[in-house]
Length: 97
Image (cartoon, rainbow, N blue to C red; front, side, top):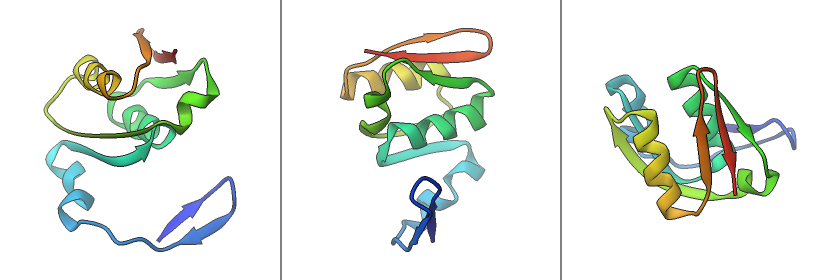
């Protein structure tokens, strides 16, 4: 079950059980996920606030699978699938065009 806060709608979706428990093993798996949702996972895993300088970037759909990668590595590889720039500071990740 997925609850979308913006629309206040709940939907069901099939999942891959290995993906669902990947976080337990230190893996991040994104399958055609909105960048906005990926940002939440990055915030949770790396303790940095994600700031989008261009709101259209939030709607990018990205795919990637990472295990024991650093934050710069993850952002580097994601930026190669859809073009965006990023800056990492002590407490923020700034995403821009």
